[in-house]
Image 1 (cartoon, rainbow, N blue to C red):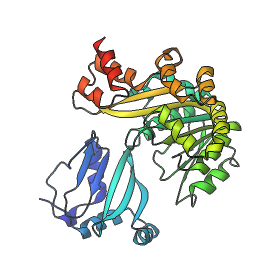
Image 2: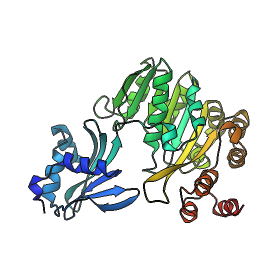
Image 3: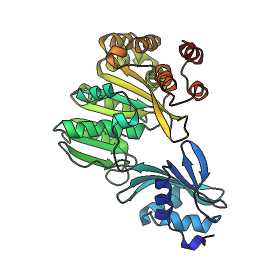
Length: 359
């Protein structure tokens, strides 16, 4: 068994990366753990139980003095570092039971295509918009960052434009291709999301990526940018197109609902609500996605506040590249990629999916 003093953090990340793990987890009185295909497992190898000092030493390897002070002051903080040529590691350092702990999300450096992700090629069409708002939604760990990276990479290859990203922390590093990219990280390149959002429109952007829609200020600025000739991408932690619009509307006072529906109808271009679903062969996960494309009919439903009509429009909107979560899951089941039992666990409307699979 290894001595704790002989372990270094980048070695742990490297092993986890080769295992296709999504996360590495460290805490006192526990062996290093990984999250692989949605399940927590032991890190491969004969690793010792770490104490509080071991964890602090390992995490300190990637922290600056300023970050160490921030952690001591607040008891938690976010940071990111790079394993050269392999991945970027988004890290949350926190305190539990009086000791430092950390969870490190592994983001591979290679940007995967929509086809590799199993997403419909029709999604590439959303990158052809010159202005408006595109939202990628889903719970934490559902692959939103990876999908956004694929869409930004398409823009980077196909357009000569200025793409500005504002992230906390920066996750995927893009290299200039045909486009010019400015990637701003909160805490390093800017003090906070709000001033960065207000400044971004003065940076001659054509495309803006905002790491997360956090509050009414972020949403307002995003809508304004989409209304004034910019294509804006962002994420929301919601499970469906309906929940996304409901969340956005409920961020604002009730008397603003009618005006907000009009703004969304004019600005919104697409909502991609996704989940990562375990494969039947146990070898990884696939992306199941609900896709709402804002056709004139969809925009009219949003303007009128008839969000309940959107499910039917997605169900019947295959020509436009739309699909429901159940349609996505049913395709995977019929192709033998996922099992029926797993599909039921991730279903949008369970009774509907059962009927679809019986047919």
